[in-house]
Structures are given as C-alpha cells and as structure tokens.
Length: 70
Image 1: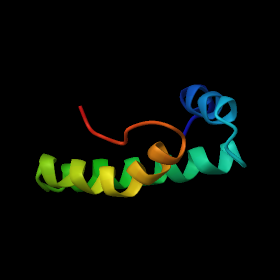
Image 2: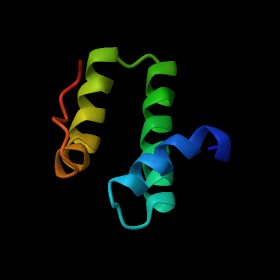
Image 3: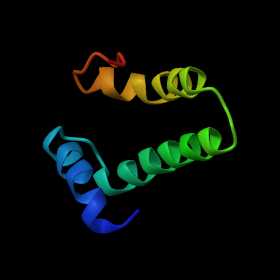
Image 4: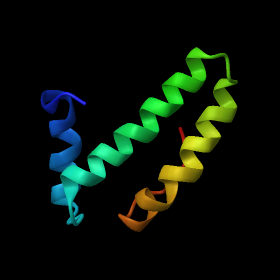
C-alpha cells in the first residue's frame, strides 16, 4: 500500500496503542486487498463482507470498537 494512503491507518493504530502499527496496517491491507480480488472474481458482496468482519472484527473489538458492519 502506498505510504500516503496507509498513513491514516498507521496513525490510528498508533493512537490506539497497537504494537507494530506499520506491520499491522500491512496485514490489514493484505486482507482488504484479498477481499477486493474476491469481489473482482465474482464472489458475493455479502459473503466477502462477512469474511472481512470475521477476520478484522476481533481486532476492532479488542481496540474498543463494535466490529459490526454498518
């Protein structure tokens, strides 16, 4: 991910006290990128969103968020 695009995520992770915010942001980006590839190959949007929530939700909840999709 380009550093200018990644900076807000890194800043947020840093503010939340995440250890290794750059490495964590890279992993989050990899998961999101994989989701976009699934969508491009025809996977169902709701299924991909559910997978993203199951993978990233625990991190969000650990950091104080709900982990729920809007």
